Length: 94
Image (cartoon, rainbow, N blue to C red; front, side, top):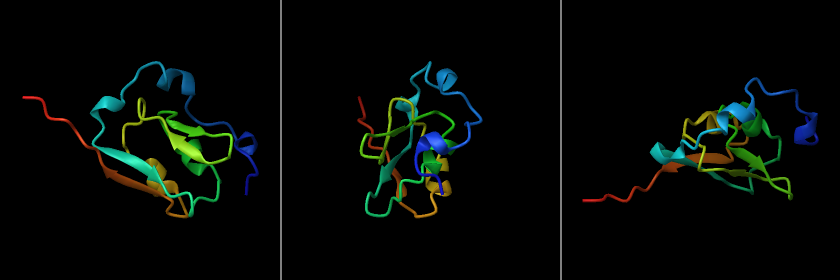
């Protein structure tokens, strides 16, 4: 078990390339974290292909919805099932 995100091995994708473009506006689902289930393992941070998982000062994670595409990798990789994808609410403009 890793004590902090600094202890994790390097990610396979660089966050710089992913964070160059805001792409979260077409997301169909958004991740929600259940802090009661989260054990701060940072696996969601490690596997996020868009560098949209941020580690907060208190050690919990937050999702940067400007970059999150709602792919569900964080939900799939979370062994504690602390992340749930919920449908995104869209405002319909007529």
